[in-house]
Amino acid sequence: MDLIIDIGNTNAKLALFDGDSMLDVFLDSSESLNRLEEIVAEYPVKRGIIATVINLSEAILERLSKLPIPLLWLDDKTPLPIINLYETPETLGYDRIAAVVAANYEHPGKDVLVIDAGTALTYEFIDSKGQYHGGNISLGVQMRFKALSQFTGKLPLVDPVGRFLPMGKDTETAIRAGVLKGIEYEISGYINTLKHNYPELLVFLTGGDDFSFDTKIKSIIFADRYLVLKGLSRILNYNNGRI
Image (cartoon, rainbow, N blue to C red; front, side, top):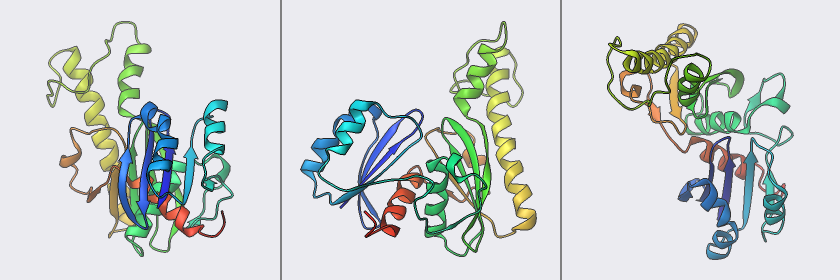
């Protein structure tokens, strides 16, 4: 059994895999990390992989070092089961590369766009030959609402959930529609542009944010909240024998 540790900007996730099958997932950031030793003791964990986009505290690093299993720390030197064409792999977020690894593994020989809606909204493209061409980083949902409030004098901070109109009738509905419809049009634009060159494009949606508009985007074929965890598991399996 494998332990997958995914530490993002906002949340941490732990998951247990047996081969390609995810057996359990622990989503609460503080509680899941606090249960590290308990999980390893309770389950027959043999190895693990850790990927983080933040600097970990000395206390967490010490606890990880004391776990009685070998850990693979994902970095830009870790061998990958895809071809990485990104020009600065040392700056590439682990979550971005893990998501495309998972999408490519689930649909080999296909052109795939992965849209990850987390703290940031990212777009990653991997072609049918397993070549990761790179991607773009945009503002996430919460970030857009906060930016409108913080960088203006009078606009309020609006909850994404609430009355929704195609065209706002007051400040609150105008902000909500502007942000959510803007993201919808942004996503549709990426999909339509890529489909000109890759007509059989598959589209994955993953990440922590819940979209109120995702069902309106017909080109999104797959939605998988755990795509990054599955990609990390795939990378660990690919590196079997190296840890």
